[in-house]
Image 1 (spheres, rainbow, N blue to C red):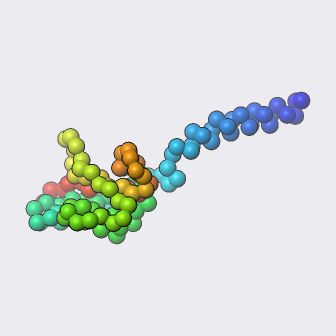
Image 2: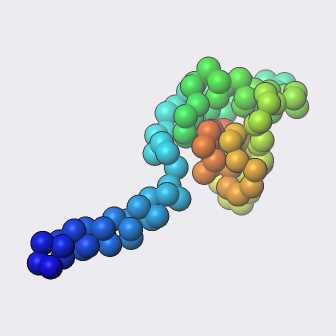
Image 3: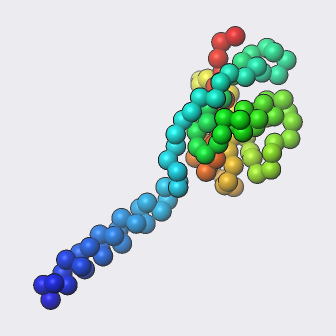
Length: 114
């Protein structure tokens, strides 16, 4: 009986710890600056930041298409920033609802001075 007690305790600990991690994204958010892009009509500029699992090339492509009112690549969705923030818009892919910045693939467009 004494030999089984540590195994039961370990099993209980794992049963508690594993579901807590299941809700977390498979890849932790790693912000990466992907450079500055000229806005539509050359009136403003914005910095593209890859938040999660997006190459800089892909992030810039999606951001430019959204800014120029062109169709987004399949599966991508974007939304405008709100409030007193420099974030112009966020885009995400791989989910169907919720905060775009927390989707499996995500990026931000942050307004910069011209």
